[in-house]
Image 1 (cartoon, rainbow, N blue to C red):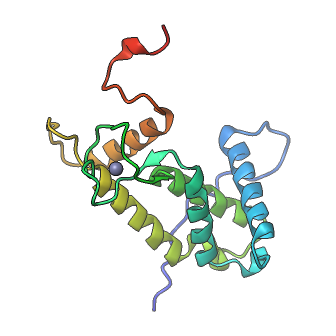
Image 2 (cartoon, rainbow, N blue to C red):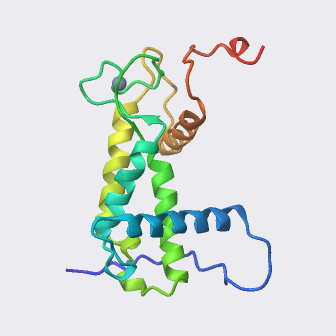
Length: 185
Ligand SMILES: [Zn+2]
């Protein structure tokens, strides 16, 4: 057993003074409120002190119902395709990038709330493992664009996946393959 204490580099903000909240800060507070609410509504109710990495994972799964990223199952013909078909019933989930950022914010919020760093459930190994599985699964489900192959550039692949997942979040319905004229007339 080795407790890998990842050198978190996110203690840049000393929470004090009357500086206006940054977008990150307000988002963090909102996430934190949501999480506390989730614990309160949990059956049986959970206290923050007893919250474990498993509960954090539960929370992320609970959030999937509000997700907007279609993650194809392996039996779907679009599995591994980046093109966005309008017709397929694969589940919508939270994009990995959103979850990863969320956990980062909640981890910081837990810290600021006076939680002990070594007990921080958001930094637990279970949570990190879960996030890795989600990332790998979504990367596989999306894969490369069908048909046309992109120029391969080693090292930039990961960044491309993240960028695509955030694009997916805004692009709701429609699914006309790249015709900008059909939008707002
Ligand atoms: Zn599908």
